[in-house]
Image (cartoon, rainbow, N blue to C red):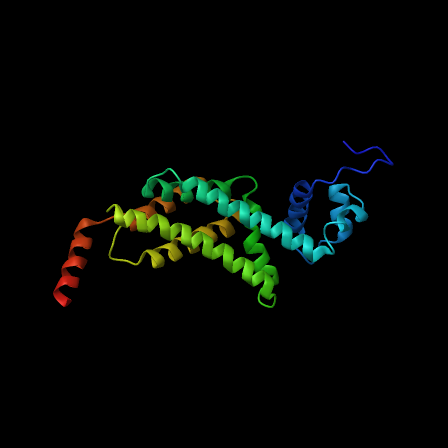
Length: 213
């Protein structure tokens, strides 16, 4: 419902950033104007400029909020799960997100990187931080799994984490054409099988290390 004429809508920073995020996500940074943001939020320019000096500041704040929420969501998801369950939950979450009705929006971090990189060092730092945070979370899961002897130990957990990360980000891009969830689940199962401990391979690698040692 629209606010009555003459009564400005109350400014809630988080609500405004969520609205701005949707605008930027739909149209891109360059194509979104301050007028678009005002129209979508129902706020006057004076209210917006009290907190944000310009469109870029709004974009950076919205991007940061999006990234922070994603990192926090991933950390919370992994807290009380076994390594294998944490990996499966992460893969399942991205598959469901990518195949959902809103999956065709893709990932806002990827959208920012695609539109503004190379050339924008501030965006590059933010994207780099977000990507490394995801990789670090995956690496932590894999390290725990190796320590508990449920994940293979003949490969570096960092290499496996980066490989899985690239698959996950690719899944978000694939989501733009609304892929079948069953196909994504089969791919996820392949990823899980590829990192689960194969005791014969692990013992052979360990034997070779001892021989060369």
